[in-house]
Length: 408
Image (tube, rainbow, N blue to C red):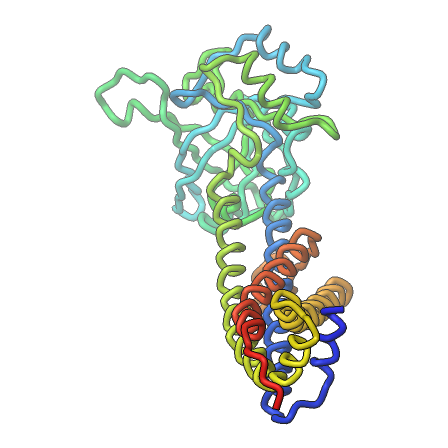
């Protein structure tokens, strides 16, 4: 009944056109705000998925690192216990540290992280699939080769043309537990060639090169069972949190077991903060629309004073009258919200199919805005709009319910 009155008031012709204009402006502003919120949240979802997919090519499901220091000792029996866990697909042992890579052909050098990997690395990581030039071959301890990031190649001018001889590169690494007072004696140098170039994301492309673990351990003076990390890939459907907790109990407090999220806490936290900061800013547009709604409903109350008096004389309670004007405000909010969500959904679906909104610059991995529709975003935006509409309707509806009876 209350919504029926509200609907008739919404459609009815008013004595002052300003009431209709303000009501429609309010509805349009709510539609615009909700549309923008859905679009922005969907674009953030799309970029978040894209970034996660890029980072998942480099970071594994789980990673075991030392709780203190840079390395840990893991004997074969301990490693086998990890591999025997039912949810674990493969384990790759890692030895890595900061290094200097020098190209003799160009007299150029760059700082990077040199990552030594074993034969299981291709089973746990997506890096081999991202090799864009050459092949993924870390070589052997006697004939070490590197797979460098695209940015590393550009920084020191690595030649990958098969028509020419491979560039001879020199890797300078710190020696572990060097007791010499001479800084130069604390460093080791080894020669490598390049077998491939990978391209994933700028953070990795500019800072990493991969080689075989034996070469790194030899150069740095690692013990036989000493490693920097262990990277783990889980079987499909495995519960990452439970496996992480189980491994932590097995390994004890000398180790830390990190999920992919924990390996990139700053990245994921920043993405979430940016998303909700934009959502909060766009919510301000809804709040501004609420002021228009207050004006529209206040003028409607003045317009319908005679109707209010008639209803009061017929026995309507104050709460019944208040509910009519509350319903009017919620009707304006609902029409605006529904229109905005439908418009945003249509734009997102068209973008998914035709990719007509392009990214500028042409330097990104894709040339269009990625979007992803998530049901919880629709619920959140709808609830926000309706709550703001309810709050904005409360004061005018309350004043309407307190109108004195005046039948003239």
